Length: 324
Ligand SMILES: [Fe+2]
Image 1 (cartoon, rainbow, N blue to C red):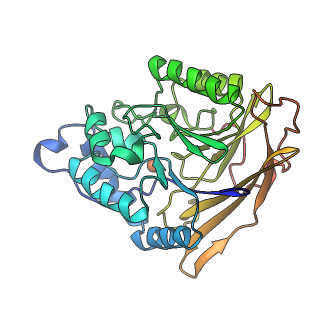
Image 2 (image 1 turned 45 degrees about the horizontal axis):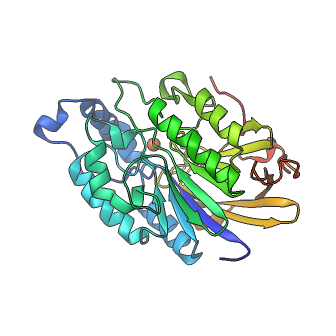
């Protein structure tokens, strides 16, 4: 793994793996199921999602990062079939996942999810719980859970004070070790979503990441290409969101895509080349790669060159800043 490290980022596939029955409707699942039947099912494409998985496999990444919403209704059947899907995606040493709001659509499902997906949702120590950390050469991958059950019409996420305290200690240790931190989280911590879909403690999470100087944050949730930033003493940290891995493209909708992230370090610091690869009826279409110079680990050299090499307006859409 010397030299370049390749991370595949896919998110929000919302796989069609089961529907609620009987008493399973007695929750927010009923609303979500109606939305799925009326709208979402028609814009999901298993075929596009399969193209994306095949394209990822063809590139043999060092790690596949899945940032949540693999399922729709947080049903045990979906968790079980979701585990089968994850196993086809790759072994747990090569696939790291964090849960999304749809994995927590009904209360009390967190333990069942942890049992079903096991090592895919865990760090190198194999223990359930968040945040977790995994070592990937000189990179430490950190997984955060924002998945909490919410009232109808809300899709917010929350990290919570206990997890935030553990995250603070973990990012502090990673910075002291001089390692590059790559953070995986479902909800964007920056204020780029509508209020009812926000990360409720996003400002505290951003402050924690800024304090210790992570190198890069990857998220899902918005189903759009996103670029926002966390300002830290070591420089601006890119916060990159990917489109859904299964949506059909439409006039107001980004189609299915994944991101191929190539990370490398030289004497000047860490660099990232990000190529978005979209699945279309004509095959995979690669968009022009974006290049970034990333903040150095805070514990090693806070004076390294720090600011993104590319302006946000090169992003396809929704590049930066809050949306209404
Ligand atoms: Fe989603």
